[in-house]
Image (tube, rainbow, N blue to C red):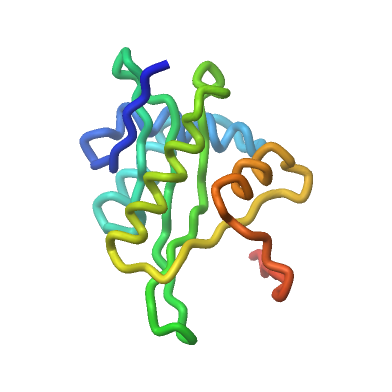
Length: 149
């Protein structure tokens, strides 16, 4: 499978939004392509996130990764949260996820970020193996907490 990965723009909404909607459905949210499109449009318009898009040889969206900027006070630098990673079912097992991860890391390095962070389910073994194969390390020092509203 031939894949090209590049940074998406607002002009790619028709390719990214269905993937984003499928990503949300994967996480047990109801499908809502209109809401997914609105959400992404706002991220692009406000420069809230960076989206890397994988496109197959037919010009169809094969996957995406979405990065959100954060800052580390201790290191006095920018970090990126790799919040969303999704590969379309027909594109899985073709190196798309790894290509997206590489492109995301290249982007973060190019803009001078101090690093990247992500979280995944304890039970998501395939993702954990991918991340570790790409040099990501599991944090053994800090425990992550969330407060939901």
